[in-house]
Image (cartoon, rainbow, N blue to C red; front, top):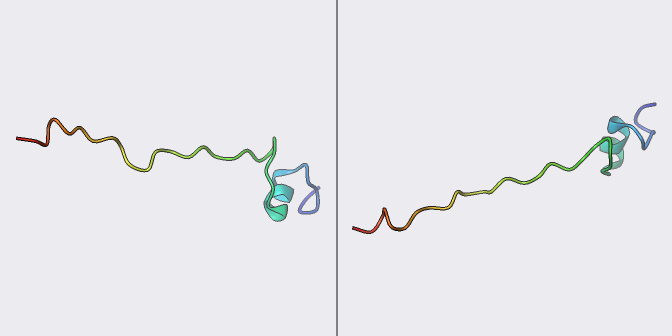
Length: 41
């Protein structure tokens, strides 16, 4: 159990892989959608 074990979180970080013990984080939207109606006057 440790860096050499593919089934552990630490092992996946060391190997650079993903899986059940190390899921990928979902990306959030970079910029919120701006309302154009409020800007034009």
